[in-house]
Image (cartoon, rainbow, N blue to C red; front, side, top):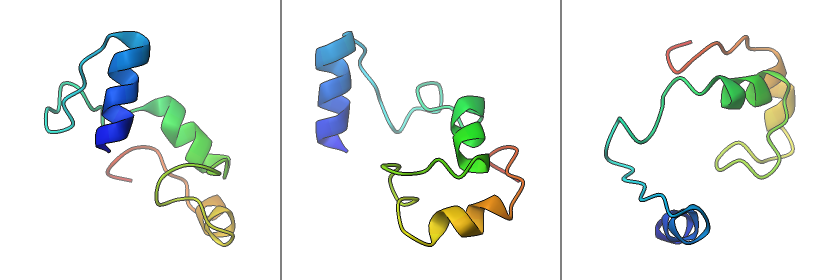
Length: 65
């Protein structure tokens, strides 16, 4: 995660604090749309062979369901 945060800072100039809820949205609609579409290749902890089939059966609308 430290590498990702450093790359975000290097490429965008944005200082990201993963412990700050103002910096990390739990309502990222673009991310949820990717999950609903089973487009999870390369997404941390959602990138596996079986994950798209499982995710496709859920209607993820947000961080709480």
